[in-house]
Image 1: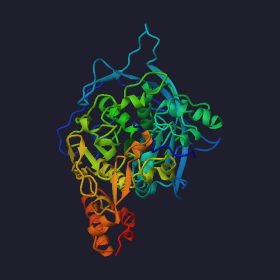
Image 2: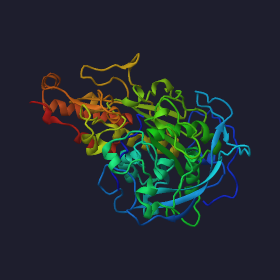
Image 3: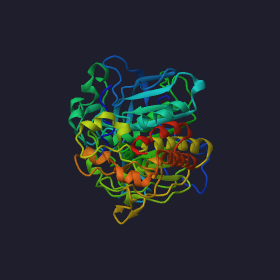
Length: 508
């Protein structure tokens, strides 16, 4: 395992002999409640699947960035890695892409007058974490678009939602969908600790004994690669990465730069493939990722300044968007793309959270030299609840709760007397505070701008707010139970959330 750059996200089957569809009309929906069997009601469009050729072994072991030194999976689970290959297509649009998300893409046609490749062979990898026994599998496979903003393949959403994935029996698959993870390239958010870990070199260079035979044709093909991997999971051939588990639902998730890519996938590719049964879009900015060019990666930093683009609302697959304070206002600039909830869309904005926080980055945050301690907010609790809610939405047709949005006055957040933002999803860490938890850092490097900040309340403030430790703990427990009742924290996480209370800060 290499050192995690998951936090340094941008400031940023069988093989079918047929070809994927050239174009397709977007599915429409007038239902106020999604079907409990989304894939059966509106099944995926047939097309080529990735060939899972072999399990990858040897070398230095699975290379996937993580800040944690704990085992990725417990006893009763299997972690493995496979090579997947095929021929992918790129996508194009006949005109400007509309900002309402209702794109019309087609496979880029071959042009004999051009030397631009529109279809290209690939050989990439997937990492699989799954229950060893079918009886422990809940029928859902979560496919994470691995994040490459830090120059290494990373799985921030697995890190955030790991507890819920494991206790629910959800299989997880991470896909090296983009070229920098395999081939190397420019790093969007460079820091020394990342550079020392080989950021930007690519798997082929970092561990040639294990990965030398991989190759990626460029990010123009990443969207179809992602689709083809999902098809392979639904209908495996000789090598089954799920070990015989039969998925009922396949969900797509991605955080930060990967959420930009999922925005593009939802708006342009999902209408053509209908491959995914639901989406968790975590910490997207206002723009969508570009369609990409053959032979190179997308400009991650440049994507931030792209045109604000909403998610289309005419799909049958439910979409849950989760945004932190850092995402809505600031350099990621999600706010101009904000849109109302709908029958198959929920947008959750979480108070007291940062794009990446102490839970995700661990001690790395202490090595970067940010002007304030990084955010120690409740993000991972809400990510776990969001994944749980999406799985239930897709499987049982029960839509997640609607959430209030963060309060904004013009271009700034409205904050309470302690500096915590008003509105949004609430937890005891902001409603019964001992700190000011912010998505803003107050300066520093690009990485620091993503990490937010934690500012302890003063002894005077705490004494005025809490007459006693008993009063503090009573209020904290009540706020925790309210968050659980509202559906934004899971009952299984109550003990951990209560453990985050800090009565020692109260003087009496």
